[in-house]
Length: 437
Image (spheres, rainbow, N blue to C red):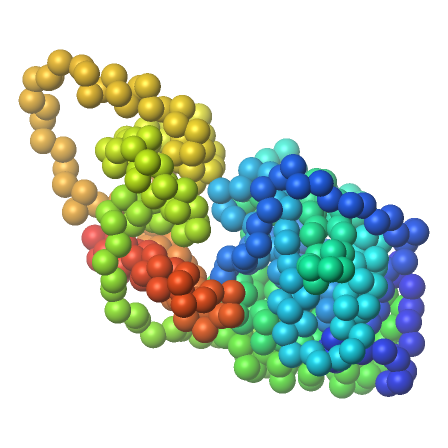
């Protein structure tokens, strides 16, 4: 079902002071579901936002307020998550600059609409891959959501059918810095940013006009008025993205006198961030960050180390054991498996046995880790590993810029977050040096 068309009258209501098109799917009566706190509640976001490319290219539209809420939920998903978290989001986070007297009513209405929101998504292959000529299915965006009026907070969780598009992504995904996304106000500009970000390694992307209108949710608009589409969508997006790490220009491709496609041109890999100074962080923490365990998850490990539940040697044992399982094809999600072993301690008996075992005969010297990349994936070429490390380094530098300025952190949490991120940068730079950057 196509989204219902809505008037672009300038007199219509603006949510939380945000300038947007306010187009809304109305595909059935919204149902308000009260959340029970049976799941871990995530209250702070990650600087890096990731989603499957099928979701990047999905057909849907949102208002500006809905888009900020959507981004806030995406940012609460970590790489090691195996289930969708319950997200707790304050009104201030999604309406930071609003002094409107109706702000809380706007948020309440937004929650109602989000419960009716439908995403038109490609059906994925058995391993989460995109397939040729896929079937398209509509999925409700939200599993449940509830506005807590007295606290000024929204609690929400994504629909469980979206797990393959949001969790444990190892390929066919696009990542972006939350700090860059928050610079963009218009929903259509958000979608264009993601579409270009997917092709950032190539520096260009060509999209048919009809295809682009579908992905942006303009199914019944600008059908024969490309001049209006250019003035109201393309040019504002170009202006907004010029303030991000992904500025673009474009060329109009015509058949006769009719524009039928747009070629977007942008800097490959986005704009580069300057190198940043290192900081002192525990070696075990550097190792965990290097394999993709989220910085916020290290606190759990620190607490267990401080409580004497295990020693630092167990952390290194887990890293080695899980890496061997990955190489043998028994484990696909390295970061998630490592985090589970450290929180559940299920490898602890095996680790303790190694400490009690009699001393073995001296083994042949093993090639020093200083001469090879630390976390090379099985079968990955040196060039492929170098690209992976450079991508991670770009993400880490963007994360550091976010941590230094974001209101998500305070005087107590910011220094530690900065230190952890700097440790990741140091580790990635060292790995690049070993393989020759």
